[in-house]
Amino acid sequence: MSTTEEALKKAMEQKSDEIRLREDALQRMVAEAVRSALGGIYKDQDPGAVTSRPAETPSEGFSGKVISVEEAVPKDGGRSFSWNNGINSIAASIKLKTGDPKKGIILFTCSLRGEGTTTICSNVAVAEAKMSSGNILLIDCNPKNPDIHKLLKIEASPGLTDVLLKKVRWEDAVRKSNRKNFFVLPFGQGISDPFALWSHEEIDKVLGGMREVFEKVFLDGPPILSGPDAEMIAPHVDNVVLIVKANSTRREVVERAIGHIIVQKDILGMVYNQQVFKIPQFIYKRLK
Image (cartoon, rainbow, N blue to C red; front, side, top):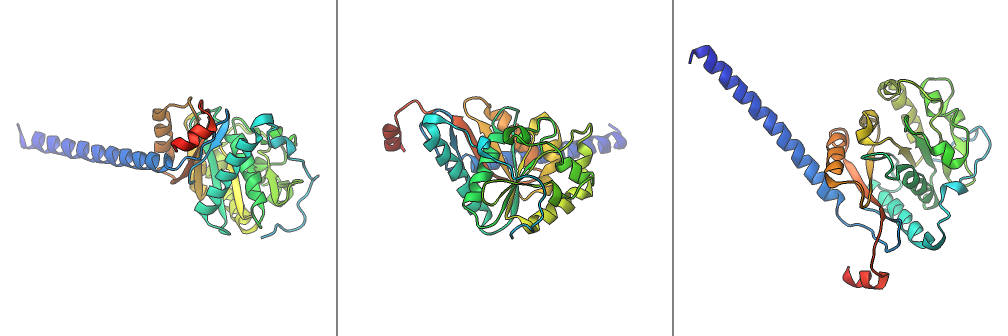
């Protein structure tokens, strides 16, 4: 073998070693994130129970009609106690993990569509507003399936896209609600290329202004594996909460999602949604 061939072979071996080291490092990061997220689950015995893991006053002049958010809180009949308990547990965990009265911007996301991100995010935001002295803002950041305006029965525009495109000030697009300390910003007009919004410097300027006014800002985000949107939003936030649909989303899918997002931001915690317990509560409590 010639000297040139030997040098080329050595260089290829070194490159292969570097790639393996990077892959091993990423696998360790994902494994650590999964282990961290899988610790300390809040559980309840009822179907649809929500489980959780540790995970300044706005200026006058917010325009528009005061909206009702009653529809955002499920009328769940027999399971109202377990539902409220789970939502309050998530809100309390976030409050403790992020610090109080520390301000923060929190992205709620999931691996795939249909895991309950919008329902969980909106209800946790309402619960956080109840237990906070400061004000809480809920923002719809899901370009493919913006549902906050449908859930709250409000107009979609003006909203986030209108603000980022500088068509309106965010102070004029944010809606007051009939719930104490709770404000909403819907997604806004639909756009063909949402990717440009997340890389635009205007998003940091807008979120920076909101950070000065609201104690917490909750972002209802898109699924991680359905496109690059969640990964592009993540660098602009302080924390990420991952929603996982119980008995549905496979572990390897969750690990893939964490692998994508952890490069941008650490996972604050995981919410295990719609878990069903098939044994009576008093037996389950004895087993814990």
